[in-house]
Image (spheres, rainbow, N blue to C red):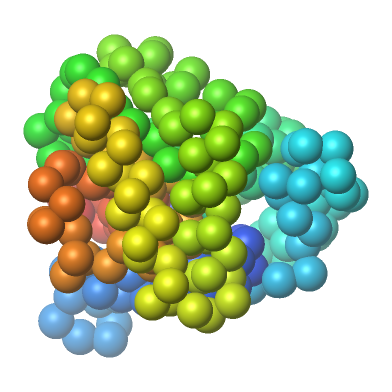
Length: 239
């Protein structure tokens, strides 16, 4: 049996608020009675990493060299498990894992586990995310393999709803992000979604927990899903 990881590395900065929010949720979701019971976390929050969606769509440089540099920084700092709180970055997951001596957690696998944790084991699951995440089929492949029927907004609706919600969070205009994100959720529910994946780590910030119940559908938060996977791995039986 492999040893339980002791120090979590976080490759953040994609965007910076999402990386910081992930580190916060690691603390908030870990069952602990004292400082010493929490999980040691190394956060490399590098906003200089080139835009992942632009690279995928052929409009910008590859983020892979900068992400590999961040992985090396975390490994050198003693991380023995690494989380990347950016969904689109997982389009390079295989290259990152191949170059890393340390295990990387996969955010989409975490989301599938979270769907099951919330009692959604089959049926239609809606996906919101960046244009690249949706166009490249990152979630669709994993959801189909897990027995779900993925549905996504049209390309026009991704541009009209997902892109402005994500951009508002990146610009620290959180209040402006909710309306387009909520409309995207409602469109997917109208198409029969039993659950909706907030498949960009800006989207859980656009749709805060206090406003989710009113939307009337199971939401899986990719920040929390990844944090819960890390906690479950590093504190077996806790998450």
